[in-house]
Length: 601
Image 1 (cartoon, rainbow, N blue to C red):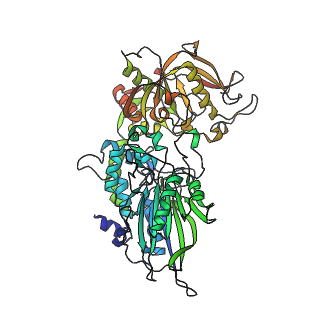
Image 2 (cartoon, rainbow, N blue to C red):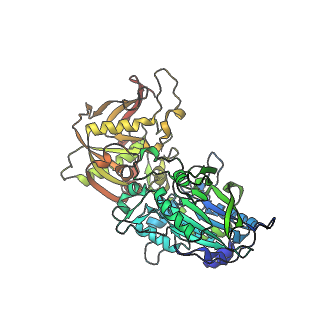
Image 3 (tube, rainbow, N blue to C red):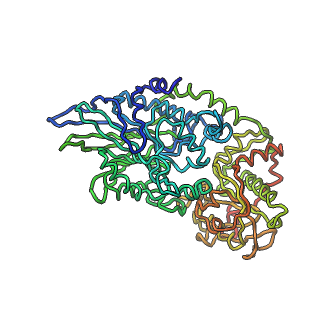
């Protein structure tokens, strides 16, 4: 099926494909029918911009970790196949030529479907496959998409390959070439919508990505790209778009609305800056928000200079929602003026998957399902992460066991080969489980859901204590004698599970009756108290080693070794080679929660 046929099949005429333009040019679009009749002699026109964000490789309403249809407590459905049906409905209601479709990033990472075509059968190989997200988004008829931070997880060559496969531009006005400080990707996209009044509406979409890329994917971008702040780059580009004749300026920003950098991450500029962009940069009509994985139906932010409202909306991640920005314009004094902007959401659980999309990607989906269901070994007992956030569990011990063993083998015989190796890990998914009996790739992938790689860092006993104290902020202060509800004990201050680290190789208590900063007690190695000047090797993932979560010391510590392979693959290979997972060989209670010396559990 050709791209032209796909677009027609999904209810969008091929002519709208002219909306894809090289940044810095104005694309000539086909005529659009009137969406709002003229009243009282004033020429008026209405159109709709649909928006998605944080799709994270989800095409089907399917969970590759459970090998079943996706389900959650909120009765949500996910995926581009569902969104395709919603998009067709909106185009039918509004008039195909009165709509645009954009995305706010984090597209090519997050599911085993996306992983397979990045690592197992990569789109970068000669005459390789087309990425499933490119296939689906081309077919649905996206007009433009901003880059998210997770676009950089697999390296720039794969991102460039994905970019070539997309029939729409990938935008990032604040991703600059490190040498020239010129945009490394198109900063914006501009098109014309033909009205019945003989006066086109010029619509510009400015793409902004997340400056945290400089930390989170340092290995891929350091020395190659730099990422200035969102308000600064928006202030540079929005006036230019207006001077080029843009009647409407929309920002697609892979950045949340809080005005902060989440969970203490010391990103070089504000991580969640969408509200700051709306407040500080005049000339913006609406912002499609991404990155924060929150649902914002409509938020109005007053621009400090103009006093005008800027409308923000963030559809729920993984394709659970579709944002609709409805624009109403009037022709005044020789130009179009935005009279009103409103935002609303449509829910993916109200529609069926579009068979055009499921058919188009059916073979890729089946290939990935077969891959993740490969048996790679056995387990003598089941392990689950249900209680991992608040007590030592075998499944997190298993991650640490493989990481420590890998680092120990890598350093053997070298300068640091005789130092004790510790390991950090976090609970990435409370639903993760390794069953007794046969273990598949998807079992392991469900336990370690991120594309992190492994490093070895040199730390002291004093630094280790600081590290553990910082991690222990995760628990809600609970006085001795007060009831303990595990459901309310964790995530203090909004700290996510993935920013609570446990460290294996030492033993310690966490006194949750104490205030943060003075909770870690009885820290021992080999049964002896840990001395401040003791030296350890810490097996640590690259996110944490690069400063993710802003844990103390580790980002500035000496790197002794690093590996380019994902930790998930290291664990998969370990199971394949060992043949058996036996919790009795590695599981132990090395840390516990206490109150005044008494164990909580």
